Length: 106
Image (cartoon, rainbow, N blue to C red; front, top):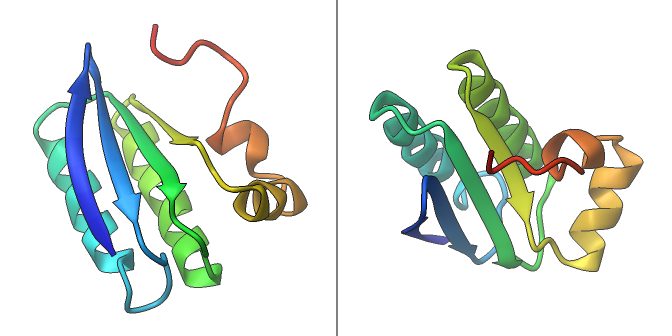
């Protein structure tokens, strides 16, 4: 798992690439999001365009990151998930929460 960070206006985008599974990126993602929250960032996007697979541990880490950001009155969204990951989010009913249908950049 590799994570690259970029800024778009007041939104920090984390471009993830590789599998998000137990032992492969879950801890790295947690640390990166925690650092962003501690630095005062309120809007974080997880770009999953280059993530082919997420297991239950990876999904759990995304939820933990969402909860952490939400606790600090911020917003975290999943961006560009593959069809497989989008289906996983729908089955677990996390699609509305993590992908949102609002203009979260406001």
